[in-house]
Length: 132
Image 1 (cartoon, rainbow, N blue to C red):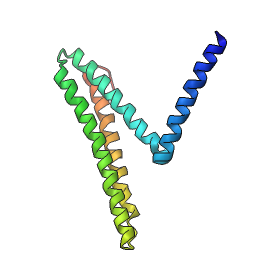
Image 2: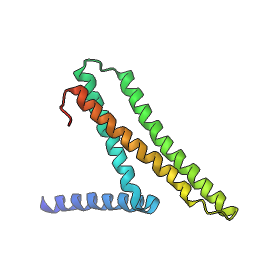
Image 3: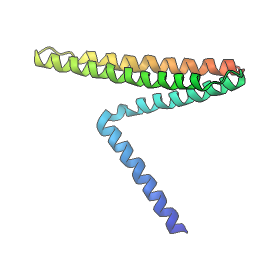
Image 4: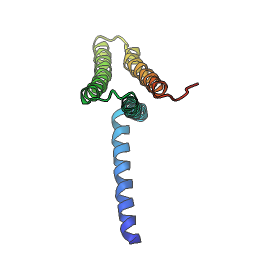
């Protein structure tokens, strides 16, 4: 039994290591920021669902709209980083340093992180939790 648990643990550890290594090679160490934003998305969806149940206004169409909105936020992040990257590459072609334009992608992510956090706090308030 102990050996079987050890094999399962090793497989889980190897899978987590693979995912982390892939994310780090793709996004650099900043992948943690994207993971944090994803966690905020999930928490916001959960607290929004609890709020809807508490207010007796739960509906599948509202839930679907929430999911679509979150997917569109991720598309917005992708587009902002893609456009930033393309402009930096264009600057390289014409010998102008446009590295600072990558800040547009990071600014977009930062604004969305703040927005998700605000939404979670609003959900807590509407649920009836005292938020300082």
